[in-house]
Length: 399
Image 1 (cartoon, helix red, strand yellow):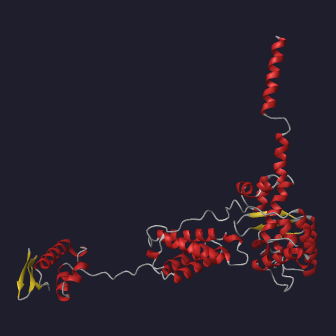
Image 2 (cartoon, helix red, strand yellow; image 1 turned 135 degrees about the vertical axis):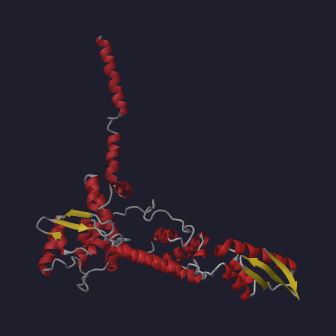
Image 3 (tube, one colour; image 1 turned 90 degrees about the vertical axis):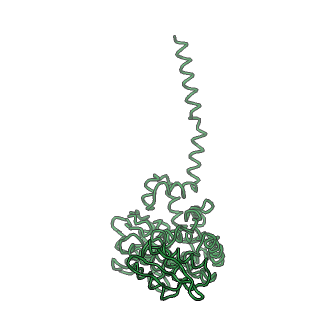
């Protein structure tokens, strides 16, 4: 039992704790403050070293008195943990991403895109002077989206800032990792829809006259034009296509796609087959050599360089917004228009039938024309019901 007693001008704590006698100055002249300190000391001694009173008592009591009382229950003050900061999360996410790359669950190209978003978010946090994760609230993330959209739209080929949805998805993934590590209580990032799901920006196939103009203006880029036109490969797959994946005997190209890791086997169009045979005779390439070379440097294309070459080809041909992915749209829509089964088209493209129907089928006029012809054919529910009623009447007359 402890008590307080005034000595000279300050109050002292007196009493016993177990076999230990306590006699120490509380360091206050106020009686009420002395009683409050006494009650907190008693509670701390009764609860032991795990009591939450000890950190507060360190602030109230003289250092020597606090250390003497803390020693009675063997209380050891835990070092203060530094608040989690953005750089801590970024390092933790980078380590997890490297592990996933080693396990084959994440592509290097995908990680490169992740790093771009992480760098942009870090630049934004510097402008608003935020370091701690606890300060990154939903309103802060919404400010970043506005800031990021403005930076995207300043670029020459921003396409209206549609990349913002991907940035939001990446940040959502990063903060999901933070919640798993208990670095934040909840994810502050709200998704901006699924990346690529823009009803206003679906497939953009070239028109027949545009393809003719592009072929005429292809010049040194003819092989790149034919590979994109007759394979439907994404730009990343086209630039990484190797001669070992081209079988001139069977007339097929076999490729494990980078994005979805799907194996596709594409029969070669005659025009493409002749062009590849001529290129193979000219270069005598090794199986590991790239199929597409930059005609200016005779070195393998990079994805950005291929993009700019096709863009320049479109400018020469007078075709607006020509880029590699439009050839993929063209190839897919062309196959559907020719009557190829959607399942087979999906297999060639390395996508699902559901994705095919969602992104490409609405852009095939021939499919809509077939539906219109079927509706106007006169062979529908009404004709079936009319025939059934006529049959019933005939049977009644016979009876």
